[in-house]
Amino acid sequence: MDYRKQVAAIYLLGFFIDLVNMFITSVAYPDIGRALHASVAQLGWISTAYIAGLTVVMPFSARLAAYYGSKTVFIASLLTFFFASIAAGQADSIGALIAWRALQGLGGGLLIPLGQSMTYRLYRPAERPGLSSVIMLVGLLAPALSPAIGGMIVDGLSWRWIFYLNAPLAALALLLAVRWLQPDSPRAALRPFASMLNLRLIGEPLLRVSMLVYLLVPGVFMGVSLLATLYLQGILGMSAAGAGALMLPWALASFCAIALTGKSYRRVGPRPLFLAGTLLQAAGILTLAWVDTGSQLFLLAAAYALMGFGGGLCSSTAQSTAFLRTPDSDLSRPAPSGTSTASSGFASAPCWPARCSRYCWPRMA
Image (cartoon, rainbow, N blue to C red; front, side, top):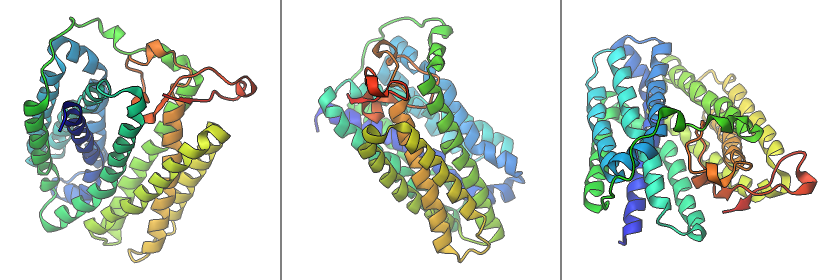
């Protein structure tokens, strides 16, 4: 295996680990709540703390890599994640679990930006769409499979093994990083914190809309998924594995929505796709209100498929829209958003005059 494929494999494994941690814990919430006497609000912080840790540390990735070297920071992140995962599995209170999840996020938050940076600079622009397709596949497989696998772990072992499962994955990534990554020399000292986030980008309307869509569609889905899991397992008596398997129609529908976005974005633009996505997401949430027994599998699958298709439309459209009007000189700096230009396959381009009053159109990078 040549070096760039080795780096890509390490990045994809780190990306997979991060996504698994976002989705796998939801099926364990009922058991965690009973074991640690936690309220619904406290259970919500199990995922929120992890995502908060990711968000806090991501802007520091470029500066830390420049100061200490990418390999050193990547390995340190994996070590932090490894030990925090074991500690989370041993937590004896909900407060301790939330704290360890935040530390997990701080460790995992550098895996994606560092891995993406190390990988993409090894591939020519013409080769990056193919790499983005592999990343998209991992991005769909992780949320599709991890809840179902997590449900089987909870049913067969215990909720603590949800966190222990991270240890062998992190250890494998750590071993590969130590063996495969070539060390790079530190390049510069740290700059002031103010330069780490380009808050000026928020003034761009397309970026603001994309950020709002990410908050109100995928963000709301995470909350709905939490409450649905508690209802299905705690009230309707569904197994953890059965509740986790509902992410399979969600992921399949998301994949179809992403494929549709790629084919229709240039033709119809972002506005119709945003509207369709939000309406379908709302229809999926409303469909859940009709579920009153655990045997209504078709209705449950339909609800998750609608939410997956609507969320996929909104997420992929926001991904392609966020940085359309952002100058190329700003694309290498951290932006105040969870969107990523590298995985979207698009770069900023001039407006088409006939469409300029509505939105700009992308060109492939």
